[in-house]
Length: 168
Image (cartoon, rainbow, N blue to C red; front, top):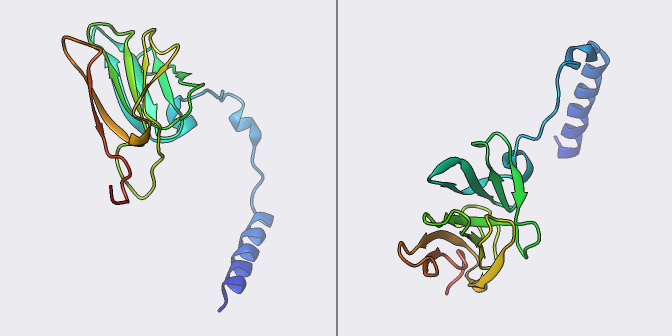
């Protein structure tokens, strides 16, 4: 049997079942209200997480293709950050333990899988994520981990995989 004939038969069965379906009573849904469920509903996989140690209700997450999000309510409400940068794929987030307004973000998913989104370098915010400054490492493409030096927050270590499926 050809694929076209199979598709035609399945379509006919689905259409005929709609003819005998009971009507949907929309009054059953009158009490439901819609709401934004946060970054998972808006931008896919969560690829990086960090929270402020002194106030764990402040959480930053990075997503595969939707930038950085911040919650000040322990994850109940989220607001998007990282809206004007060159890339939206995030692989790593690190909050300076001595200054929670100092945040580093590495772009590009860091876990190779059947599909991943590339980034372009590393960014830093000194105002809690309101503004971001590109700090370099553009060609690294996939930053998976950032560690901030415990005594000097201007020094960081970065784990990056570069191009996962080609020779370097």
